[in-house]
Image (cartoon, rainbow, N blue to C red):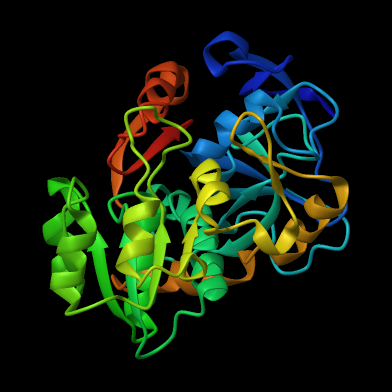
Length: 343
């Protein structure tokens, strides 16, 4: 620890509901371990995974306290042993070491375990919105086998992961259909997707829009965060011609277990527990760590800097306004990325 330096950080000392266990406090500034870097955080994205961290749903969570905020951007402040690709003063985006460090990205400073250089013309806020949406969408499209000529339905395309998946699939040359609300429907159409609403009759509208079943479907609607978001997996299965293995969900694990739909954790051997959330043993956790696609962050940072890729940002908050941001996150209706700005 840096005895003479402090950092503000949002973290928890016990597991539970975020409103009950999270608090903004000051702590000693940790040094980056081997293969890690420390950044002065300029922007931090909030994600549903922060809720899971607070609840203790991940197997790698051992020692407390732990911080939240698993995507961030900032300026390199210190580098650990063996790090040669960045130096102090470089601008980076990346993933805070939420498993190994006592603080997360929702801090003045953070330890990163994965990172990429930021192009000079990319601002900190849009950069911090990239890591989780890019990684999850890219890996999910690979799992589904999305490539040029395939037809894909993205359900929940107004979410950050859904919006990313639409853009990525189009870049791959796929025919893309999407469900979204009015907030992002026109933007998605402008990108090249054919869009319909996500309410009753979804399957019939998609079948009509596509002229028959689509080949693949990706579900990104946040049913595991908000009780106001209803499962649409049965409709998605129908839209792909009634083959549940052509549908993949990143959120509706209980529905997937009932219908035989694939999930984003299937290759890693996760099971669905009584709380309708994925449960991992140590072996599954290790497999997950080895399949995460943080290697593509630099590519999509460059595309973002060129104006060819983006994640919609809903609102930004000062670090001390974190409760307001988290309340919005837990509704499942943020309508874009929520950011904390320590600086």
